[in-house]
Length: 205
Ligand code: MN3
Image (cartoon, rainbow, N blue to C red; front, top):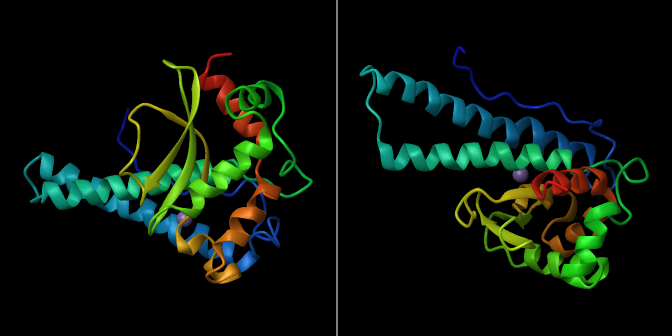
């Protein structure tokens, strides 16, 4: 198989479709500029790495591997994020159903508890980062994760089933410094069907 590069995925909905939770302008900048920059950043380092591996370029491993991790992490997390959103009342919002609903009830006592806890996780991300939900197959638990920037607190091998972007660029244009309002509003565009499918896949149910 020939080597290739990362590609910016198209959004599974239109730029206007998540308004008013995210305005057209915010979503466009977030996807076309921020996410695109992570894709371009990762690809530029991969290209340089290809050359370095065959002796045609010099690589600064510490700096460039850190940057590669940041950019690949950004690409992967944003791809998950766009997928786990959907327009309100057209796949987005409401409460999870199916197996995921049962698991949330078992682990958190119910959706409202889970939601309140997850908002706290998003609110307390320091600087730039993500609130993410993972599932641990070994201990049969939904385990939340606070991702610093795009990579620091990852549990290796744990699959993320839901992610919420807590970088300022995810809300500032629409909400200014009031991120609490963004983390409250986002629930009306969460695509629980996708999150439930990911959960069932990871937990092999
Ligand atoms: Mn982002």
